[in-house]
Length: 283
Image (cartoon, rainbow, N blue to C red):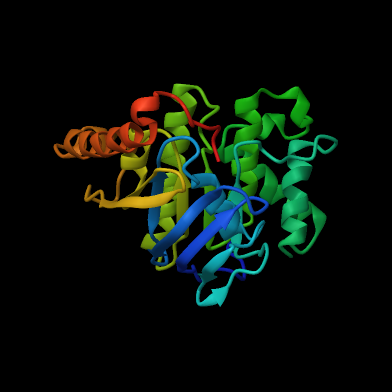
């Protein structure tokens, strides 16, 4: 059956205005973040571990609230999770007692998609096939490798077809060949939607600078502690784009190297004369 549209066909814009955040009133993680993302735009976020990349996604997902400032989607304040935002986190977040297909079916039910369970199961199978897992749909998450569980989580996020896709290192656990294929899959789905007059707004956190350049319209560089945006870098490579066309473009190396220099400056400032002192886990 064909892949579907749903009631959230109109994509949304994202606005982060003067947002600060700390966990439990302790050390500030984000400090006065300002970020505007147009609807249908693909924005990648890079930065050293602990700079607040994942925390920013959690705030936009509505899983926590800022200490100060405002986050909004399509002009509506973010006050909690919503069906207009699909999220892929590093830890998969699959129900271990449900098959991979049923994890996706449940998400479709919660989104009010599909007229009957058989239709939702068919949609789930289509998206599992997209990520190369159709034959594994009946397996429990514990029967799969970490990379296969992550691909299931990606299939679930794509299946609900929300206008905003928040992705936190979604390809980090994949082998290089699978990672390259999933990059192209995401690019194709996003570009097809935009060419059709719609398109998803994507905020994509990664530690891989090359991946950020391959995928993004812009790359946001975050650094220091507390986390701040230190650079908003337009990629400028032509669309439509594939992984192969991006890495072989004349400007690819220059863009990648500029971002690497910026990131190295952030890391050098963060570490300072104390070496590795103060370097934390990913946030």
